[in-house]
Length: 312
Image (cartoon, rainbow, N blue to C red; front, top):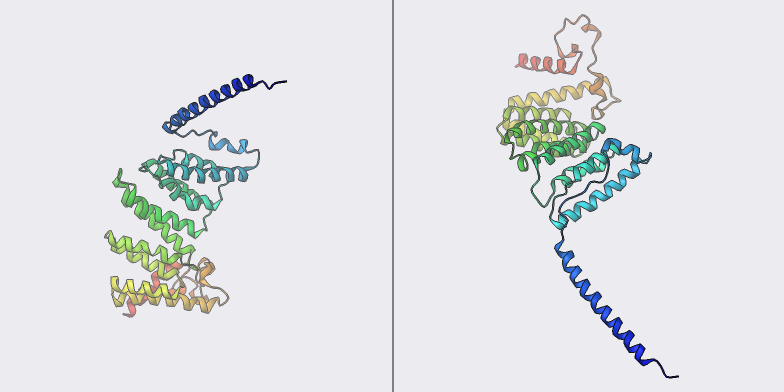
């Protein structure tokens, strides 16, 4: 039996024509795909207050999924040079599901404000709210306080508050308070060095008295000898030898009092500050206006300052 060459030829011709049509369609569809750009983000999740119902009890697991999506989406938006519109909503969802999760708070300012397009003021304010939420849920985390203080005092006023310049002084002052708290909590780490930049910023903006108070407070709470030496140099420049000496003597008096009363404690953990000065029996009745008869550290400091002035 002879092979059906005619049928085979017809089949090859049909397949060739079909391949040509498919190739032509792919080229056309490819050009259309290149021209189509995603312009807006769609947020498919319910309000953050309802997410705990949706998670069916797997709050942390859902927070992990949303966090992974946030990181990937941030990179895609930067590559495509368009605004990441849902990042604040995603953060609200993650914080609602796992409010004590530390990592998202540390990266909030970078993920929200690092955009390929200008950052809007409402996003900057939302970033601050998120960072403040972090220290609310983790009040003893010095690094979170430092991150918050740097953003509020330096990053936002220097880059993102041009639309409302009247906010800049208030943000700077509030940010410095956050930095002070970071230094208090991070007395045993290098955070004190990083928080020290707040005083330099105060000096550059003309707030000399506030900078002096900042240096004095940092000197009173740090146990780092090198940092103390640096602060002494700043105080010498701002106050002179006499006033700087008073600050140093107050710190030495505090150390001596701690060592004499509670040798088993260190002021690094704040326990001695919580205990307060020990009132001696001879101070009964409150008739002795000396630092040894003080019931609070504020009273102790004031009386010691008065005693120093009287001796001079």
